[in-house]
Amino acid sequence: MDRYVWIITLISTLLGGSFMSFVQFLVTRHDERNRQLIPVERFNQLVSLTLAQVQARLVLRGDEFSRRGSLTARERAMYREIYEKYHDLGGNHYAEDVYKEVMTLPVSDFGMNINKGENHYDEY
Image 1 (tube, rainbow, N blue to C red):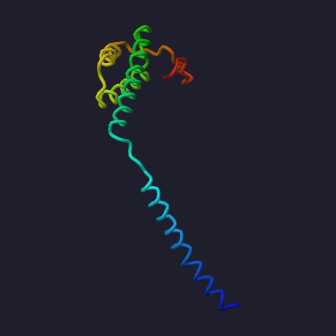
Image 2 (cartoon, rainbow, N blue to C red; image 1 turned 180 degrees about the vertical axis):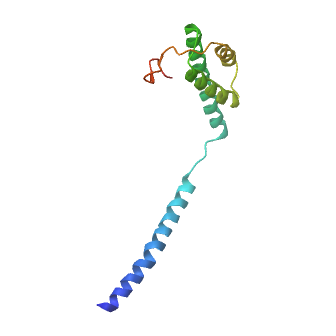
Image 3 (tube, rainbow, N blue to C red; image 1 turned 120 degrees about the vertical axis):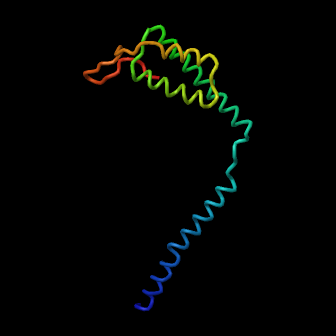
């Protein structure tokens, strides 16, 4: 019985790490073979669609802020961040005009309960 203990230990040690590494290698190789990249034209279409959605969001929120006549500091920071990312990806057009208009609006605490830290306006 004692002579089988070291054989079992040796086999489990060799097969444990090595076997699992080999299985992982096979799975990774299989995944890499089956992975397909999105064609460039399709990717560009997805970027255009995303830019159109962000442009619509910027314009709708900008119009809302203009009707209200002000925006909170948090809304302004979020709006600026989204616009800058939109602009960096090549978006501009009408959203740029709306952005410039929104940045001239005064910052107020309207819609926020500063004491409780709660927001009472709709987030986007």
